[in-house]
Image (tube, rainbow, N blue to C red; front, side):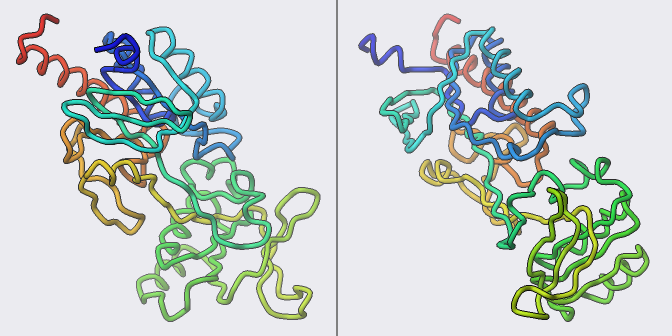
Length: 321
């Protein structure tokens, strides 16, 4: 093998430098595995000023969290490049990953930690306020939005559950049906919404009302052509994005996927191993509901399992380790 080829061969390549990818890389680096993290630099939670619910890191900004993680993996010799993997294939016993910058690297094991994309509802003013007073997760932001006049934008009947959950943090909640017809609500939905004190507002939402860089209302469609529909005073709005998993590499490598209401995710075992030997998924690449702390845990578990797999493979091959 040439020197150049050897320099581009790793024990593990981790695709994605978020909490899951960095956590896997940290474990692998500490296990003295030659590890490369390829990170496109597009964290899902970038719009948020802070993250919550991560023990000892509650309130830390996502950017600071990732910066600290990068510093930690560097201590153990893990390499990180800011690039994007545009293609991957099985090449003998290794995986080959082609980077957008032109480099090609090989890995004995490959971790996909590419997360997912949030596709927001197409509503004027919503994207600009996402992560501020337009939020999507009560566990992430509910405490900070507690007791405020709150709206929930319904993109599907599942939004009923979100509205019910939100009442744990605010007793002034209105469910704007928007994309959901009144007939789509079940008797159980209506009973629970009434019991929780959630006001149901039928009709389409036309836009958000913003005053002095603060959300102050939700305007319904109708009224005058200039947007004169009824305005409901609200200071925070929950809007669930449509999750689009970044599963292109998993598909190219032949991993079996399972369909869920939130997209197609890989079939994995309890460690994160996909149906393709040597191919792992962690964080939101493995499932929709992983919060930051869960994603980091998934990465840790995958990293430890990968080190064990490599060790046993070398011993079985008679390689001195």
